[in-house]
Length: 117
Image (cartoon, rainbow, N blue to C red; front, side):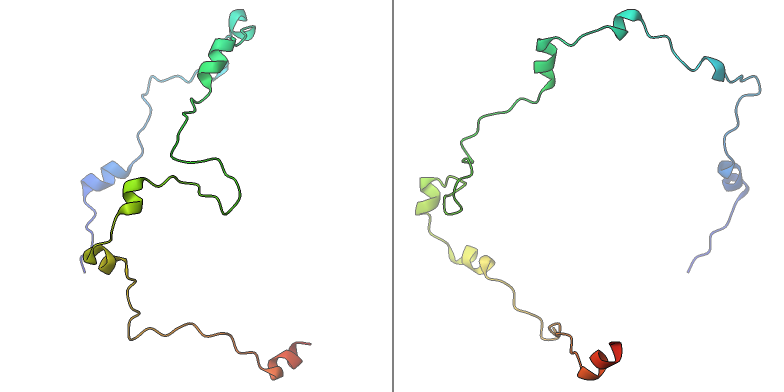
């Protein structure tokens, strides 16, 4: 295990940056002046239209209907495709490890239930 060595350069870099000695804070004039035109401006219909997201019509997904209805369209080529041995092998789920212990259901004893009442 290595231990860190604090060098004089690291100490110098760890100090916060100081303001310039001639710096004068101008806290009194923080509020800006807003022009009359900016205060009375109104949004045009065109600007309102441009601010909305553009929705594209897509024929990939259908409108939601009954749960039995399909949502996605499946191409004819996908419906006619046959699975290869490699794809089928990749699609099979992995077997559980030999060391895997499934979670147990909690065991409630009657003795514990009588004590809590």
